Image (cartoon, rainbow, N blue to C red; front, side):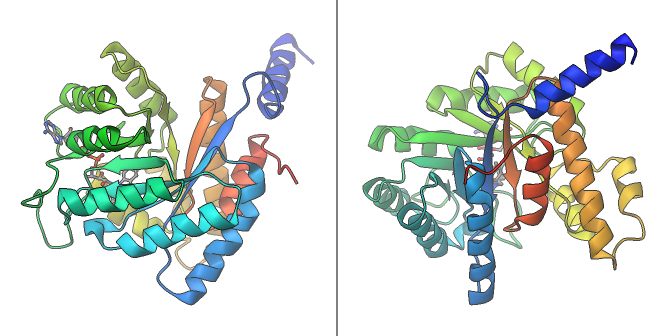
Length: 304
Ligand code: FAD
C-alpha cells in the first residue's frame, strides 16, 4: 500500500467511526403529515425504523399555504407523546393572522414542543409571490421575533445555497439570513442541493457576512426524477447534468432508481463529511429505506 492509500484509508476509517467519538455526527430527519390512513401507517413504520438512529430532532412540515395546520400539530404531538424523539414543528406565516399563529405556537409550548422551524412559507398554488395576511406576519424575521418574545423556543430557519428566487442577490439573501439569526434563529437548514462545493462556498460567504450559527446541509435522496425537476424549478436548485444522466431511462425502474439515489446521496454526504461537516438534515419524504442506507454508509448505527 502506498502512503496516499494509507492516508485515505485512515481518513475513511475516521469518517466511519464517528459514533461515540469526541465530536460525533449529528443527524436529523424531516417528515410531512400524511393525508390517508395508509400513508400514516407507512410514516409510522418510517419513524420506528429511523428512530433508533438517534436523530438530534425530527421535524414535521407545514403544508404549502398553511394547509396542514391540524395534521402537522397532530403528528408533532404524537411523536412527542409516543416516542423519545425530539420533534420540531414547522410553522409558516402564510394564510394566518398573528393571533392564530400565536395560538398554535402556545399549544406547542404547552405540550412540550419547544423547537420551531420558523418560515415565511410559499404562497398557495395559483398565487404569484408571498402576500402577508392582513393581520399576519410580514415574513420570517417578524415571526421569529414574535416566537422569541412568547417563549425561549429553539428556532431553526431555512436558507438557500443557490439563492432564494425572491432574493435580489446572494449578498442580500445572506443579509436576510443574518437578520433571521439576529432575531433569534439558532440554526439554519439549507434547501436541498447536489454539488457539495455549492454548500461549502455558501458557508464561506455566510461566515464572511457574519452568520455564525450552524448551517446544516439539507440532503434530499432523489426518489422521483420527474418530481425533482418540477420542484427544483420552483425553489431555484440546479440539477447538475451528471444527475440527469444518472437517472436517464429509469422512470419505470424504481428498484434501480433507488440504488442510484442511495449512491448519489451517500457520495454527497461522504464528500461533505470529508470536508468536515458533522450535521446532516435528511428530507426523508416519509421513507426509511434510502435514508437508513445512506446513514449506514456514513457510519451511523442504531442504538438498539
Ligand atoms: P425567508 O428567508 O423569510 O424569505 C425568502 C427570501 O426572500 C430571503 O432569503 C430573502 O432573500 C428574501 N426576502 C424575504 N423578505 C425579505 C425582506 N423583507 N427584505 C429583503 N429580502 C427579503 N414551506 C412550507 O410551506 N412549509 C414547510 O414546512 C417548509 N419547510 C421548509 C424547510 C426548509 C429547511 C426550507 C429550506 C424550506 C421550507 N419551506 C417550507 C419552503 C419555504 O417556505 C420557501 O422556501 C419560502 O419561499 C421561503 O421561506 P423562508 O422562511 O426561508 O423565507
